[in-house]
Length: 79
Image 1 (cartoon, rainbow, N blue to C red):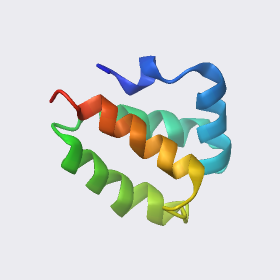
Image 2: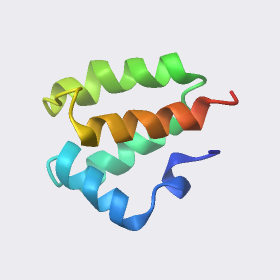
Image 3: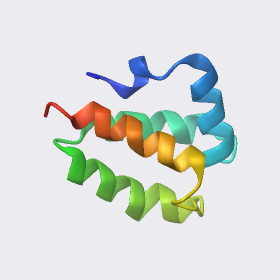
Image 4: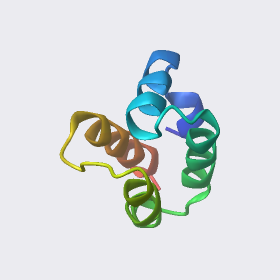
């Protein structure tokens, strides 16, 4: 995956926005943009766990979060 914004299908995008970002489209878009700018997986995961997971009170063991993290892993797999 070269870019999360291009890799996430429309239905999945809406799922993440509703489940993880309290239906805030702009927050989701900003998060994806910032994650795509990260240099590696560790940087991306730090960004997510220290900011979005806290801000939106994510349960890291729930399916939406696991799916989102899996996409981030795939994004940085070859990096």
